Length: 379
Image (cartoon, rainbow, N blue to C red; front, side):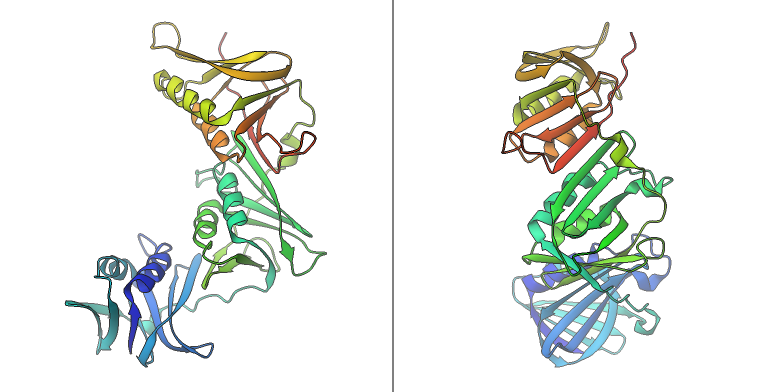
């Protein structure tokens, strides 16, 4: 095998493929990155692949191929080497059981791993539909923030994707907050109804990395759960991941239909004030908010502890509200909304509140909702 490719193109492709490599592979070959140089789809290309039996990643780039072939090398080592090469053409060739990487005056020799032991990458499921890549990345980032990180509750570490015709609904929860986002897409079958539970970290990394092309194609296996799989493709990159099993909570029942109070606050000022006031809060102690007409008072710390108070302008319709939140969860929700004005909707001080952006139209609804559980204050 022998081929040449520009350093920047190679570095980008290698770094993207290496992100899914396991830190502690169950078998040594899973730490490898498969390089396949030859004719792909009628062109001379280099195809890079990684796979750990859960997530696969594959990207192909243009290259000058002198001798087609395949080889398997340590993916993390190759990524480190390529990232530090000078900005010139890189030549990679095989010499027996070794791979030689040359660029300018730099030359590296790597040992290969046995290609024949490397698992076959899964095929992409049948195309389900496509969505604008930037819109998809933004929607996923808004929702993934509320996903759980406790691996003993795997169904809470995922993002639930619900497909109903032209509407895709994303939802995640860690039991203390819930994020829901709706977006439109172009389904292959307008009558389609499907559900998938995708690992949140994998989905967030994938969505963010596929903005190189205008569209992201989504392919969902027919089973939809358990041994099911979902695939994403865009900008010459393709990734698949196995779906999570387990029953996701019936989250729609948690979203209140009516509210007793609605407050609006300038988002950036609110975030900065929360960060400042919560500096004095001990770990896991809540931030207290008091909404009244025209103002919002933020407080943290009590009694013999350090204390902080800050007052912001805020509008309020309905009853005055005194409520307390985990400050980190509150900031996560405020950062996720796209509007400059944060709208907070309350029923009572002991029931969940909903954070949204202020809709562009007065009677419009927000396509993103962030539900946050209040912290009960000891009286």
